[in-house]
Image (cartoon, rainbow, N blue to C red; front, side, top):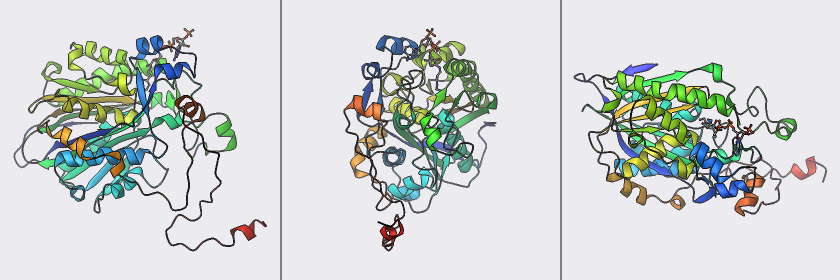
Length: 408
Ligand SMILES: CC(C)(COP(=O)(O)OP(=O)(O)OC[C@H]1O[C@@H](n2cnc3c(N)ncnc32)[C@H](O)[C@@H]1OP(=O)(O)O)[C@@H](O)C(=O)NCCC(=O)NCCS
């Protein structure tokens, strides 16, 4: 799928007017991983470029991190939460199968009118959601769209599998796209899906094909599985060509792009993109050393950091580009029109403790972190608590008959 965006009178454009990100404070270093699996800092840095990644705290979830990043983006945009009319949240680690994580974020940010939904395209999810938001705006169906990428991947990793557990981390990023009649914003889009790679990165159990069971858990089928080499080959083959096609749809050449903001999976993949586009690495934004691969959150976190670090100026042309499970890939060429200085104020205005995602009443929860990771990070693992899941609506009468029913 692709979209061209030539300037035409009366046309609506979708500009980035706000951006924000959030990464949890707990750091998991390569040295920590050395204590869990047979690996080394030297191997991880030389093969991936990753030095550390973040781990969500016990009380944090995809929705809570997304809400912090979203409110930062909304503050940066200078709009009110109620001005947002569509919320699109890209994730492969939603809080629940249902409701959508986007619905939880809508409530947490104090929005009352938006249509909210999740987008599933794995690590390309944010770019897919961005393209969808652009379509809502340019078609006239929406004026302000909140686009989020958020992940809590550390809860879906097998910390005895060195192929996967070294790569991923947690975090969230968001942008607000606003409608304008002034040219700028998204210029060209390219999205691809190659189902031949469907089982190269996947999470086997938990869905309709393999609902969760004692057996699926015993076999570790609720963890991310990956064929690293095949995925690497796909990424290096596709990322540069997807980016280049989006640039061409914008009527530009790769050399016209001031900064590429690629999915932060592996420094060698980003170097291959630079080489494929005949551009120096200075045109590629890199922050994977600090966060690892945060899947759908990676591009919006990188975008917010790049702008806040002064790497993007008004009038610059940038490209966001990602690849991921599916296999999917996506890129958007964007003309930047917002004052970059606004981002830092937006970030400072919203602290994680100010944001609350409503939990189901009476459903106590233990720290959902995998036990091996909890031990290395020194987080106490609470004993399992058996709490019935039957009383989640405030004011609902107590289930007084429960004890009698089970004959206690
Ligand atoms: C995963 C990845 C870093 C592995 O790098 P690689 O250079 O392909 O490494 P290989 O898989 O060829 O493994 C080389 C050796 O290192 C070993 N190895 C694998 N993981 C290791 C680790 N964490 N520490 C130490 N050694 C490791 C392998 O077992 C292998 O050993 P062998 O030669 O004795 O068999 C790389 O393939 C990659 O980045 N793939 C893309 C993954 C990705 O981006 N996924 C997310 C998509 S959104």
